[in-house]
Image (tube, rainbow, N blue to C red; front, side, top):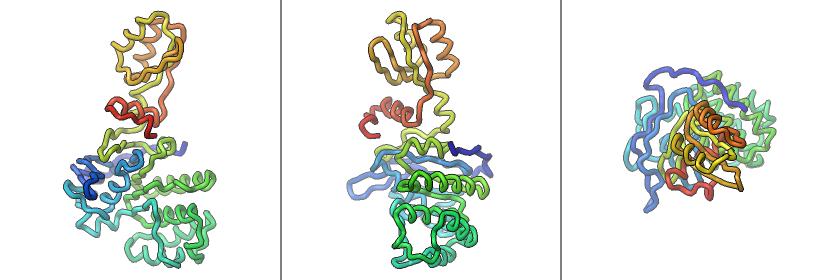
Length: 313
């Protein structure tokens, strides 16, 4: 696992604030009254199904799209109307754009005109590590190599906020791990605040310390990942008496129940110590408390809100 220890905030205004943002494309409402805060220093995971609005939200954050209503503030300043704010944001879209016939060196010169803090030597050093030729035409790069190059440009930009749309998708496992380590090193050293959009819940579990679930254009929840995991557990139990399950339901909120023969698998909301105490007092034939994965937590949360998320993940 590559997650890092989170540092404290620099100030109250050092954050991204999304306030009641709506965005429609014709009759399709991509974002429906989104409100969200992303504090400085977080690695924020924006998770959702395809078509949930992740890419649209990132384009509003980066100032590419103007919201139909609401506002997006970066360190207290509206992003869309202020180019100086956009100069502190670097957006890597799922579909990278490079000059036709261009080389990394030519793209480097282009980015240097927009980002005053661009680190030329840092970029070339990272490209050497990943064996990317700065003089080779980017059109001859593979999809994975283009992903790597986009990420390196973002790291070298010197921007404070780093918006990533499916950034690690398409990388082979070895390169993926190398790029992640490089990415985290830069986060620690230069205090980047990455916002990473993905539908890969397993990967986000390793990367992020705060996650938001976007579904049908709305935020279902936004929670610190560790705190979220501490409040919900999966219990496998064989009761001695049928009434014991009902008694457990009176003490804790049961989010999901599955049964195979005498074995129950229950998803409970509550503190681990209280769950253990209650189960021990019942003296069941067998029980085990298992931490949930991020995917299991989101499935449980969305089912509570009436979404059949099992068919969407």
